[in-house]
Image (cartoon, rainbow over all chains, first blue to last red; front, side, top):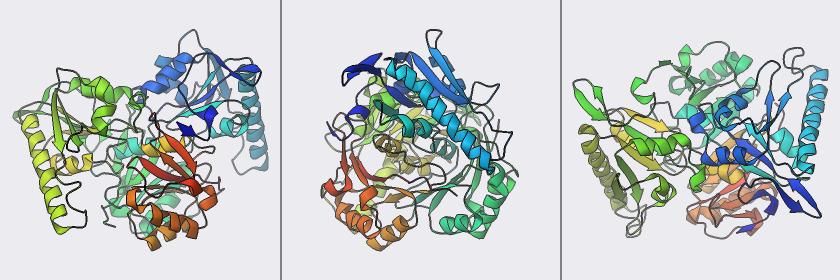
Length: 262
Length: 262
């Protein structure tokens, strides 16, 4: 194996490892998939089992989506480390205090994990879908990967889970796929949608009316689908025209490609 | 559950099901992930176990990548249906006979599967990565999904598996990701690369020198990585400048985003 990131490769192992003169734990960003616990990988389940500490983000009063997906893999032997978002309702995301509070929360969450790692206890940080695909794990990764051996366990994304419910492949032949956050302004959305063959629009929420206008302006309304909570018991697949006005967190617009040839 | 594709949802089940007046089997497109057998999902393993027939594409004289990844899930009880590509060396892909021969091969493969389905035997058709993400399963899906109950089991893509080895998340915040086949002409490659935040270029092979020029022209050389055989024992991660001139099938260029804000 020839790899520039020796701390980032290799198989999950229980307990700690020697780094320099000190026994430190390993940080795992574990992709737990889109929602159906059966869409967890064998490696994700084994990694959780091998780590004494399981960390996850959640909202106040809940255990969080990732924790719920992984619940069968977590035992009474695990030390659980819930990281409870401080401000998800009280302040709007564009309020100046929101950014400061949320960054301070990520700093503090990373330090709580660092205490375990420094003491030689490996930590499985759960992440819905895949950790590097818009994953919340990035907040921990950017703060800890330079200090502790860190490994990302890839997962099934909500994107391919949503696409799996449609009557056409997401991409085939020479299709280009664009994955687009619904947070972009309307003009950027239209431009990006016009220059692609297949598209997935994520982060819908309150952005859905804007995304709807952009898809219509790009001439893609007839090819688009709305998919909500793919792989979960309450999953819904609707033609784009029947999409609701506001969308839950677990939803996306999927526009399969037409199989362009080079 | 409210879903427009009743035949395409629900849990895998052994054996056959009633459709109209006839007992027919179900066709499963099973994503087996990027290469490490541990990156198969629990659902993929259970679906294979529940199907009496396992089908997979392969080259003459080999069992194929997907069959190798899934080998621990396949038992002596399974009937194996290898679908051996007829022309992968003899004719170049742009030869007029190549397209005809390969389409006839997919027609024939689909009919071999249809015989089992019509007789009430469910078939697990294996697919590296995810079946709808440039997957070879599309050739079967496009021919059979209108005739038999068909379900796609999503898998971990080689894209997120490759990205998991890098020192930065693939996308964060408001990054747009473009997934680009290296088969595009150089001008299209440059244009697509210039209008995205993060990118993954797949289908490299003989296209690598062209892709290399396009990435340099788009000014992305410093941010790009070459990843080969991610998650397999022989995986390699190289800075873009050190990429080889020809790339094996299991390789891609990954350009992580920089975390643009809307």
